[in-house]
Image 1 (tube, helix red, strand yellow):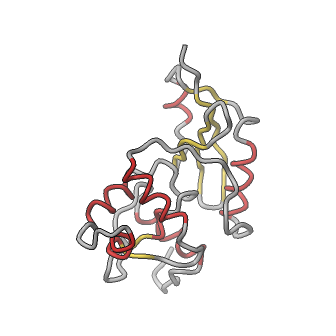
Image 2: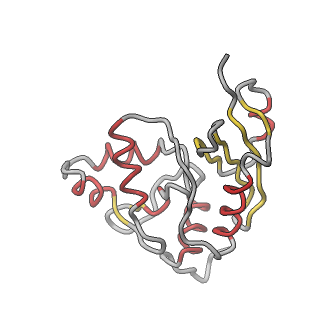
Length: 168
């Protein structure tokens, strides 16, 4: 029998976030919305607020500006290359950004910005593995699984993107 994943949705200052952990308590997924209804229809997921309590607490602290780093065990599923990219994302300090090209160069593949972008896009633990800190070479915000408004909100929270007169 396959062990189910445990999840719960927490309300934060950046909106509802659904955190998923395995039976060992390692974070495997983070959804940037409330996907409780979707997950409860899948027998591989069980709602368990106590199993995700520490992750939920840290996410609430982050979203309210009280936390800059996460201290959680992570277990994202992905290829060896994806893990290399995700490990680099974890090295981007709070309040800073990097371009896809900069990450590709660090990996020794200076023409690999598209591959880095694809790995970034498949990151299953956004925010905690901070893929929102990756921007275009021109400084423009580029695609984000949670949508560009969420990416903008996270970068503003971290102080790496200044608010403009026209921000809501």
